Image (cartoon, rainbow, N blue to C red; front, side, top):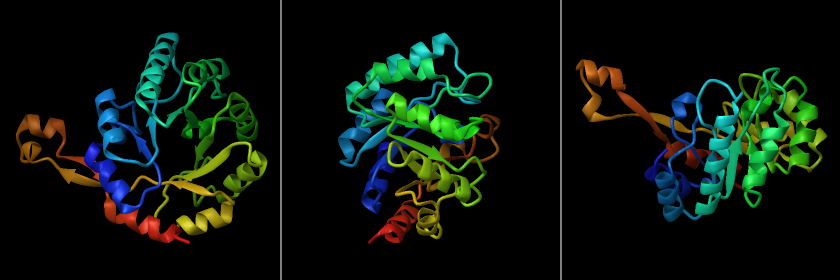
Length: 233
Protein backbone atom coordinates (compact mmCIF):
# COMPACT_ATOMS: atom_id res chain seq x y z
CA UNK A 1 0.00 0.00 0.00
CA UNK A 2 1.23 3.49 -0.81
CA UNK A 3 0.35 7.10 -0.01
CA UNK A 4 -1.46 7.37 -3.34
CA UNK A 5 -3.39 4.18 -2.50
CA UNK A 6 -4.49 5.73 0.81
CA UNK A 7 -5.58 8.93 -0.90
CA UNK A 8 -7.55 7.07 -3.56
CA UNK A 9 -9.21 4.95 -0.91
CA UNK A 10 -10.26 7.96 1.15
CA UNK A 11 -11.49 9.90 -1.87
CA UNK A 12 -13.50 6.88 -3.03
CA UNK A 13 -15.33 6.68 0.30
CA UNK A 14 -13.38 4.33 2.60
CA UNK A 15 -14.18 4.94 6.25
CA UNK A 16 -10.94 3.53 7.60
CA UNK A 17 -7.63 2.25 6.23
CA UNK A 18 -5.46 -0.69 7.16
CA UNK A 19 -1.88 0.11 6.22
CA UNK A 20 0.30 -2.87 5.31
CA UNK A 21 3.32 -3.75 3.26
CA UNK A 22 3.72 -6.95 1.21
CA UNK A 23 0.00 -7.51 0.69
CA UNK A 24 0.88 -10.51 -1.47
CA UNK A 25 2.21 -12.16 1.72
CA UNK A 26 -0.94 -11.40 3.67
CA UNK A 27 0.35 -8.06 4.93
CA UNK A 28 3.45 -7.15 6.98
CA UNK A 29 4.41 -4.15 9.10
CA UNK A 30 4.98 -1.11 6.87
CA UNK A 31 7.82 1.37 7.26
CA UNK A 32 7.58 4.39 9.55
CA UNK A 33 8.09 6.59 6.51
CA UNK A 34 5.09 5.03 4.82
CA UNK A 35 2.94 5.62 7.89
CA UNK A 36 4.06 9.23 8.19
CA UNK A 37 3.23 9.88 4.55
CA UNK A 38 -0.21 8.31 4.84
CA UNK A 39 -1.08 10.13 8.06
CA UNK A 40 -0.08 13.43 6.44
CA UNK A 41 -2.21 12.67 3.39
CA UNK A 42 -5.53 11.41 4.80
CA UNK A 43 -7.97 12.35 7.54
CA UNK A 44 -9.71 9.00 8.11
CA UNK A 45 -8.42 6.62 10.82
CA UNK A 46 -5.41 4.48 9.91
CA UNK A 47 -4.82 1.08 11.51
CA UNK A 48 -1.38 -0.44 10.92
CA UNK A 49 -0.43 -4.08 10.51
CA UNK A 50 1.91 -5.36 13.24
CA UNK A 51 3.26 -8.57 11.73
CA UNK A 52 7.03 -9.15 11.50
CA UNK A 53 7.10 -11.95 8.90
CA UNK A 54 4.90 -14.15 6.72
CA UNK A 55 3.96 -17.81 7.27
CA UNK A 56 1.98 -18.07 10.47
CA UNK A 57 1.70 -16.28 13.79
CA UNK A 58 3.82 -18.25 16.28
CA UNK A 59 6.65 -15.88 17.21
CA UNK A 60 9.77 -16.27 19.34
CA UNK A 61 10.84 -13.87 22.09
CA UNK A 62 13.02 -11.78 19.75
CA UNK A 63 10.15 -11.32 17.31
CA UNK A 64 7.78 -10.29 20.11
CA UNK A 65 10.37 -7.79 21.33
CA UNK A 66 10.66 -6.28 17.84
CA UNK A 67 6.87 -6.10 17.63
CA UNK A 68 6.76 -4.20 20.91
CA UNK A 69 9.35 -1.73 19.63
CA UNK A 70 7.37 -1.29 16.41
CA UNK A 71 4.13 -0.84 18.37
CA UNK A 72 5.65 1.98 20.43
CA UNK A 73 6.96 3.71 17.29
CA UNK A 74 3.78 3.28 15.24
CA UNK A 75 1.54 4.47 18.04
CA UNK A 76 3.86 7.39 18.76
CA UNK A 77 3.63 8.50 15.14
CA UNK A 78 -0.15 8.62 15.32
CA UNK A 79 -1.49 5.23 14.21
CA UNK A 80 -5.12 4.97 15.30
CA UNK A 81 -4.97 1.20 15.64
CA UNK A 82 -2.61 -1.77 15.47
CA UNK A 83 -3.62 -5.03 13.79
CA UNK A 84 -1.94 -8.17 15.07
CA UNK A 85 -2.27 -11.73 16.30
CA UNK A 86 0.02 -14.16 18.12
CA UNK A 87 -0.59 -17.90 18.51
CA UNK A 88 1.03 -20.74 20.42
CA UNK A 89 2.08 -23.95 18.70
CA UNK A 90 -1.35 -25.45 19.46
CA UNK A 91 -2.97 -22.43 17.73
CA UNK A 92 -4.45 -21.05 20.92
CA UNK A 93 -3.93 -17.34 21.52
CA UNK A 94 -0.58 -16.48 23.10
CA UNK A 95 -2.13 -14.44 25.88
CA UNK A 96 1.15 -13.38 27.52
CA UNK A 97 2.60 -12.03 24.27
CA UNK A 98 -0.63 -10.27 23.32
CA UNK A 99 -0.84 -8.67 26.75
CA UNK A 100 2.76 -7.45 26.41
CA UNK A 101 1.95 -5.91 23.03
CA UNK A 102 -1.14 -4.13 24.34
CA UNK A 103 0.85 -2.83 27.31
CA UNK A 104 3.43 -1.37 24.92
CA UNK A 105 0.83 0.86 23.24
CA UNK A 106 -2.28 1.00 25.43
CA UNK A 107 -3.85 4.09 23.86
CA UNK A 108 -4.50 2.70 20.35
CA UNK A 109 -7.31 0.47 19.14
CA UNK A 110 -6.05 -3.11 19.10
CA UNK A 111 -7.39 -5.37 16.36
CA UNK A 112 -6.89 -9.12 16.03
CA UNK A 113 -6.45 -10.20 12.43
CA UNK A 114 -7.31 -13.56 10.94
CA UNK A 115 -4.93 -15.45 13.20
CA UNK A 116 -8.16 -15.60 15.19
CA UNK A 117 -9.65 -17.92 12.56
CA UNK A 118 -7.00 -20.55 13.37
CA UNK A 119 -7.91 -20.80 17.04
CA UNK A 120 -9.52 -24.10 18.09
CA UNK A 121 -12.16 -22.43 20.31
CA UNK A 122 -13.24 -19.13 18.71
CA UNK A 123 -15.78 -18.26 21.40
CA UNK A 124 -13.14 -18.61 24.12
CA UNK A 125 -10.75 -16.53 21.98
CA UNK A 126 -13.39 -13.78 21.75
CA UNK A 127 -13.61 -13.69 25.55
CA UNK A 128 -9.84 -13.58 25.89
CA UNK A 129 -9.37 -10.79 23.36
CA UNK A 130 -12.14 -8.74 24.94
CA UNK A 131 -10.49 -9.15 28.34
CA UNK A 132 -7.14 -8.02 26.91
CA UNK A 133 -8.74 -4.81 25.67
CA UNK A 134 -8.89 -5.56 21.95
CA UNK A 135 -11.36 -3.37 20.07
CA UNK A 136 -12.27 -5.66 17.17
CA UNK A 137 -11.65 -8.99 15.46
CA UNK A 138 -11.35 -9.61 11.70
CA UNK A 139 -12.84 -12.96 10.77
CA UNK A 140 -14.23 -15.03 7.94
CA UNK A 141 -15.91 -17.34 10.42
CA UNK A 142 -13.05 -19.79 9.98
CA UNK A 143 -13.98 -20.44 6.36
CA UNK A 144 -12.28 -19.52 3.10
CA UNK A 145 -14.65 -16.57 2.66
CA UNK A 146 -17.09 -14.67 4.83
CA UNK A 147 -19.98 -15.97 2.73
CA UNK A 148 -19.05 -19.53 3.64
CA UNK A 149 -18.59 -18.57 7.28
CA UNK A 150 -21.85 -16.66 7.75
CA UNK A 151 -23.28 -18.98 10.40
CA UNK A 152 -20.11 -18.90 12.49
CA UNK A 153 -19.81 -15.12 12.14
CA UNK A 154 -23.36 -14.70 13.34
CA UNK A 155 -22.58 -16.81 16.41
CA UNK A 156 -19.45 -14.72 17.07
CA UNK A 157 -21.43 -11.46 16.92
CA UNK A 158 -24.03 -12.87 19.31
CA UNK A 159 -21.39 -14.19 21.70
CA UNK A 160 -19.40 -10.94 21.66
CA UNK A 161 -22.59 -9.07 22.66
CA UNK A 162 -21.01 -5.67 22.09
CA UNK A 163 -17.93 -6.35 24.24
CA UNK A 164 -15.73 -6.50 21.14
CA UNK A 165 -16.56 -5.79 17.51
CA UNK A 166 -16.63 -8.61 14.98
CA UNK A 167 -15.59 -7.29 11.57
CA UNK A 168 -16.60 -9.39 8.57
CA UNK A 169 -13.64 -10.16 6.30
CA UNK A 170 -12.75 -12.44 3.41
CA UNK A 171 -14.11 -12.03 -0.09
CA UNK A 172 -16.08 -8.90 0.80
CA UNK A 173 -17.15 -7.03 -2.34
CA UNK A 174 -19.69 -4.40 -3.28
CA UNK A 175 -22.20 -6.99 -4.46
CA UNK A 176 -22.26 -8.97 -1.20
CA UNK A 177 -21.27 -6.61 1.63
CA UNK A 178 -24.78 -5.49 2.56
CA UNK A 179 -26.04 -9.08 2.63
CA UNK A 180 -23.08 -10.25 4.72
CA UNK A 181 -23.74 -7.59 7.33
CA UNK A 182 -27.45 -8.40 7.38
CA UNK A 183 -26.92 -12.15 7.73
CA UNK A 184 -24.25 -11.92 10.43
CA UNK A 185 -25.55 -8.97 12.43
CA UNK A 186 -22.13 -7.32 12.18
CA UNK A 187 -21.86 -3.57 11.69
CA UNK A 188 -18.57 -3.29 9.82
CA UNK A 189 -16.71 -5.13 7.07
CA UNK A 190 -13.11 -5.32 5.94
CA UNK A 191 -12.38 -5.46 2.21
CA UNK A 192 -9.19 -5.71 0.17
CA UNK A 193 -10.10 -4.03 -3.12
CA UNK A 194 -6.81 -4.38 -4.98
CA UNK A 195 -5.88 -4.64 -8.63
CA UNK A 196 -2.65 -5.56 -10.38
CA UNK A 197 -0.56 -2.67 -11.70
CA UNK A 198 2.47 -3.12 -13.96
CA UNK A 199 5.81 -1.51 -13.23
CA UNK A 200 7.37 -0.66 -16.61
CA UNK A 201 10.91 -1.30 -15.38
CA UNK A 202 10.06 -4.96 -14.70
CA UNK A 203 8.28 -5.59 -17.98
CA UNK A 204 9.68 -7.90 -20.64
CA UNK A 205 11.70 -11.09 -20.47
CA UNK A 206 14.91 -9.83 -18.83
CA UNK A 207 15.88 -12.40 -16.20
CA UNK A 208 16.18 -9.85 -13.41
CA UNK A 209 12.86 -8.25 -14.34
CA UNK A 210 11.17 -11.64 -14.30
CA UNK A 211 12.67 -12.42 -10.89
CA UNK A 212 11.36 -9.13 -9.48
CA UNK A 213 7.82 -9.77 -10.71
CA UNK A 214 5.92 -7.89 -13.37
CA UNK A 215 3.19 -6.26 -11.29
CA UNK A 216 2.19 -5.13 -7.82
CA UNK A 217 -1.09 -4.64 -5.97
CA UNK A 218 -2.71 -1.20 -5.80
CA UNK A 219 -6.06 -0.01 -4.46
CA UNK A 220 -8.96 -0.38 -6.89
CA UNK A 221 -10.77 2.91 -6.27
CA UNK A 222 -13.74 1.87 -8.40
CA UNK A 223 -14.39 -1.08 -6.10
CA UNK A 224 -13.97 1.12 -3.02
CA UNK A 225 -16.50 3.56 -4.46
CA UNK A 226 -18.91 0.72 -5.19
CA UNK A 227 -18.49 -0.61 -1.65
CA UNK A 228 -19.25 2.83 -0.22
CA UNK A 229 -22.38 3.09 -2.36
CA UNK A 230 -23.52 -0.37 -1.26
CA UNK A 231 -23.30 0.68 2.40
CA UNK A 232 -24.75 4.16 2.01
CA UNK A 233 -27.95 4.70 4.06
